[in-house]
Amino acid sequence: MYKEFETRTSYTYLQKVISVLHEPVCILGGWAVFFHVNKNFQKAQGRPYLGSRDIDLGFHFDKKSTLEEMKNSSLAKSMELLQTKLNFKPLSFRLLKEIHTETEEEIGEGQMIPAHFVFPMYIDLMVDTIPQKFKEAFHFQPADEPLLRFVFEHAEYRDELKQFKKKLWLPKPEVLLATKLNALEQRDKEHKKIKDICDMFALLWYSREKPQQLKEKVIPLVPSEKIQKVLSIITQSDYQKASQQLNHSADEIRRVIGLLS
Image 1 (cartoon, helix red, strand yellow):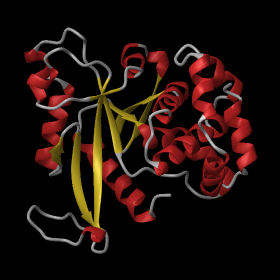
Image 2 (cartoon, rainbow, N blue to C red):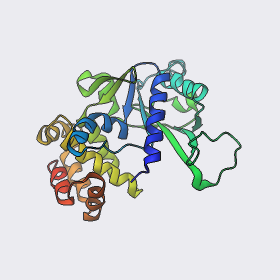
Image 3 (cartoon, rainbow, N blue to C red):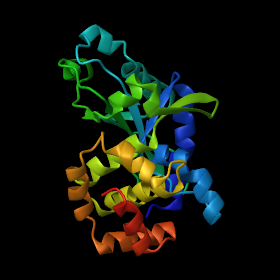
Image 4 (tube, rainbow, N blue to C red):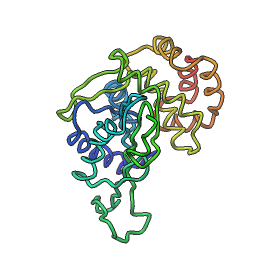
């Protein structure tokens, strides 16, 4: 799915990103799934779970946050640190760093490198709520994930762990499952759709929760009718492609994910 160079590079920079940010650092997306399932997956299969190309970070805002509060927020401080200390470049709601696929070195501004030697690595900045004057404060329209609100406002919806000598907040498996269900419906890139399917299966099969327990916890976050709709758009071909990544049969992946219905 993803090249080993890409996930290895992303993991290396994940460590660097975490090291420069203030605690706690909220990790979302593929790397959050990795931290939940990798121990059991590696024990069962003798290899690490699938990594991620991008790094997803979550930030909290109150709906009534003022302009001054936003300019002094965790998001504002994190963006400044990532740009000044790690030389990421702002690109809308993302931060970008380009890495040479052969030398594995950062590509400096103005360097002319053939596109097939460039790995664009992104940090996606996600917020739970978009205050009214957000664009005035940050000059871009953010990507929002409303379910993040549960992670920041209710401790029972997050796990805390120490990784790379920093405190991390991870959404609980049911929250990650809910975000994957919501995202899957909108996916227009095949590789992201297949990764979502892999992550859903891994959370159900390899996290510490049993599938039936996770189903019961997901229902309050995603209505059952929406779950049915999302599952209906996963094709047999999608399950086959996920099978190639997970070393589980397509039928088993379909059966386990189908437990959500």
